[in-house]
Length: 224
Image (tube, rainbow, N blue to C red; front, side, top):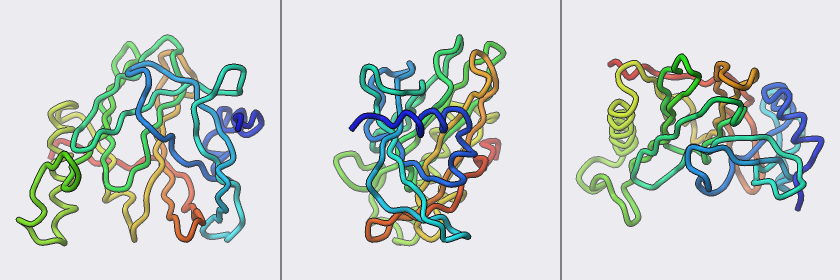
């Protein structure tokens, strides 16, 4: 299915405004070109959606990689790897006006300080207790403390990469009642301009996506 030119252009022009009456799902898969931008666009996800507060029906769009001759916006993808924290440099010179992460359901997103040349180091942290890579033994601690241990490990890794001046968007900011988050950054002036970061908290139940709305990304200082 090709990207939708109207939706893609509307999101590109005013992402926060677009999400007042719509929902997007994060791109699937890691970056194909690490530390370089890719062409992404929006296509209809096929999922029904509803906006909390108004109970209005909304369109749910999937962020996908745009093919040749399809509508697109330029975006970095902050990689996700199980059991690791990956770092991505958002470049300058008009390389991209957006940055997306994969879907977040327990991970942290780290932010450094934007340099005078416009570059910015971001990170996507995951601490795993299942699968091939395990960072700790979940049987060694009470079950209700597992999320706290995961978040602590993710904080420590972000601190090593960003330093005490860095900040993190963590589960405490979005993981309320099992909510997940779509997180993205926008550089509206392009080039070396300032980045602004947002998140959309949502739930998925029986195939229906419920959006809790878009808002500025809340963060916690790593200098603790």
